[in-house]
Length: 343
Image (cartoon, rainbow, N blue to C red; front, side):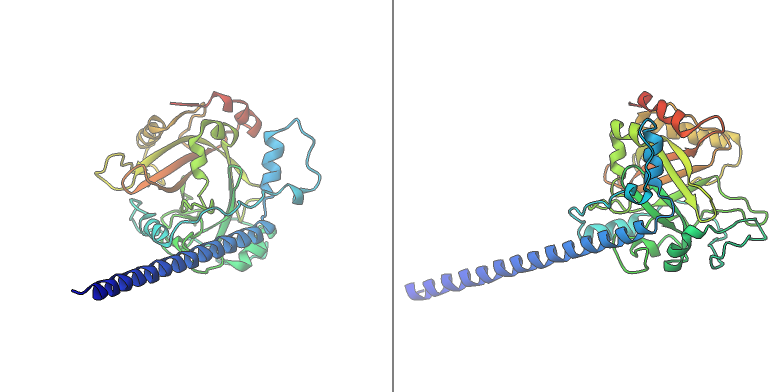
């Protein structure tokens, strides 16, 4: 091969490499711009939903957490600020979570309940449920709405109920979005239906998004200081006059794949007898990362919050909550929060 031919070949290789590098840079910039657009769109939608927040729960929680301060006069100024957009997950990461987010839950046939009637604040003759007017605007956007939940400093969002697939990759408005929407497991019966009682334990599912949306901030509960300051979770259904406070009594990582190390069957929504309840809750408390001063009783209403984690094969990070007892108040719960320690 002549020197000229060799030089021409080298020049060609360099040009091809340069073009390939340029294409990579262009594609990278385009992907980053698209990620920013998606993240900004989520923030805008979050802000819109917050403007319709029926609870004004951040003002309520702030007043109860810091009772010595003067009460907030303007509730609108006390609403939780939207989570700032951070680095969103790649499409591949979000799709991977979406395909594996709901596993190992009860498979028996169940009656799927939704808020079937349009909101009109009239009494439901079958169970005396009354739709609360302050949910009306949210309900008009999405009739799959069943309530609103407030978890920690930043997680304040509507809750929907449909099935275990649609809201894995659709937002509250029904548009495709890999972040999905917070939803209750389809196996749950949320409200009594004739002779069928409501389930004792409601399972909430949400993606662990890098930009903090949905359950992206649930990992903050790995920190004992955060747990102490945010141990109260509020959930209000569309038929509840006020948000109902729950206290977290356990939290841990698990695998949702039977046979894997760390596997735990988290799908109990009711319990056949006292022994089954005791076995389940004792196992939950034993696995917990924290020593919690709050026990759990046989007839407690419970919420279980699940999001993806990478500490186990097909992993989940799970928070277990129960409703406050008659002799408890939010203030009395918070007064004991400094007793929470890491195991």
